[in-house]
Amino acid sequence: MVLAESMVTMVFTDLVGSTAVKRHLAGDDVSERNQRYFDTILQPHRLRMEADLAHYGGRVVKTEGDAYFLVFTNAVKAARWAVTVQKSHLQDPIPTPLGALQVKIGMHTGSPLLDGDDFIGHEVDYAARVAAVAMGGEILLSEVTAVLVRSAHVTGFAILPRGNRELKGIGEVPIFELVYGGKSVKGPTILSDSPVLADSISTTAKGAQEATTALVETPTPLPQQFSARQGLRSLSKVLLCSVVVSIAVIVVRSLGGLQFIELKAFDALMQLRPTEGKDDRILIVAFTEADVQALQQPAIADHTLVKLLTALEKHQPAVIGLDLYRDIPIGQGQQELLTYLQQSDRLIAACKVADDTDKVGIAPPPGLTDGVASQDHHLGFSNVLLDADNSVRRHYLQLNPPVAARCATHYALSLQVAFHYLQTLHGIQGQFLNDSHLQLGQVTFNRLNAPMGGYQRVDDQGFQILLNYRSPLQVAEQVTVSDVLAGRVQPQAIKNKIIFIGVDREDFDRILTPYGKEITGVSIQAQGTSQIVSAVLDGRSVLTVWSFWMEAGWILVWSLSGGLIAWHWRSTRLPGITVAIIILAGFCFGFLVKGVWIPLVPPALAMVITAGSISYNFLGLKQVRDNH
Image 1: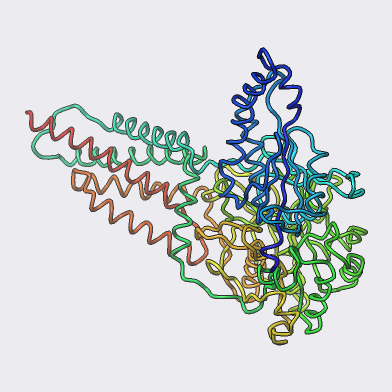
Image 2: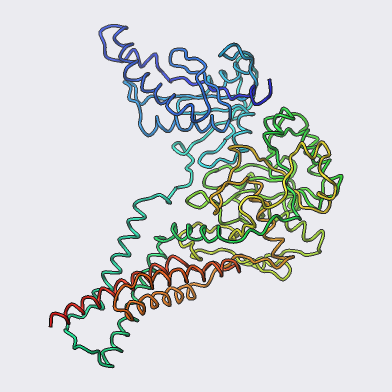
């Protein structure tokens, strides 16, 4: 039996205090209380347990009283299912005489023995013992399950160590808790589908149009022909209307009312850009589903990683970025791996700085935290920046970790790799001039400080830049771990190259991009490094934005254009406005290709509102004139 069929995540669940609950239920005898318990508590709980089970790749192996034994084909899906179950009991509690019903859940990943439709053996006992030490509302994980879930970089929950626990018949083993949003760690708030936000934008725009209409409306009857003075007066009103509308749009924008739609417009323009192809300076070595089966390892083991690094370094790459967490052992060979990491002069390991979704962070490999020089040269954080719609459009270069943080490095993995490559092969050293500028050769990277471009309301902590993707999917050539270990990768594909090692598996570390597609986390790191190196060596554009006053002037120009179109034809002239919007979009696209993100939505909105206001005004004047 291949690994994909035998490796499962076993989940045990049980209800807390069910025996005491039954005793306190109303009823004349045990049978009546048992029936009431089944109807009002157990049955609603079972419906929640099994509602979306198939969607998460799970099935019920058996039930025993209140307890469930389930198996899942994927540890991440098992974790997501468990979070869904616990959140359903938090958000819509099932009442009992002793308070809200509580569920405890434990899980372990392994290869149990198959007995018909059932599973038996040591691995099943392990999972059951993990569940036995859980408390109400908790989701506890064995070490191997914790490694698999955390390696997927799933947002919305965190993995926290809970120390070693003595499990009956198993021994003392490390236990981890999956802390989900409803409990103590909140995931990112999704604003993209918020009807309240959309309504506020529509209401504000409508209010601006009505206010402007009232401002330019003149109830005095006009003669048949406009005099020169009247013509100038009407043009001045067009200008005044344009200014008022522009100010209203800028205010709405500054309050974040247009941010969601501006980011979506940015995505649409990014998708129209021609692809630049792969960066031939970079090679990604990915641990894939094929490697899982070939190596019989659910996660790349420490001893296998040493073999991989040895095989790569034999062909003298310029630098290796290890986008894998190694703060706890995985399989055999941890000491050998740690020795290798400490001695290599071209290897940069990853850790994770604590943030809003992970209050603890992920420590670097043991031994790489001793000394400032070690921190600066051998470590980089792999945090990614998610917008409200979970897309990645920005990229960290630098962060200031909290005091006594587990991951205390200040620089991103992608930046550390770029620094090493540029200095080793090209003699170019990077220097932060201040908190807002990074100098590399002749290129200056400017920090994103909100408000900036379409980002008006955003957390701009750390040194952030806009991520200038090379291509929708593949930034570089990719091979598998097995390819390298088997010698199927040519030496020239490795020599003097930037190597990134990461995971490319279903549901593991997937990142949504402006192209509407998901790519791997290691590809995001490679995109960041490619952007830096290409800007320095090839003169490739660094994405920038205009200043506030340039953007305000841009909005005013298009608002005035809409007013003049409506004034010239004395009507809305939708074809004219449509052509103007197309021209505006063309300008925005052309600038984006050259590396400048300029506003599209605010000037288009201002143009339409101004044109509508001026047209409404002249139509009203025409009706007054015709009546006389």
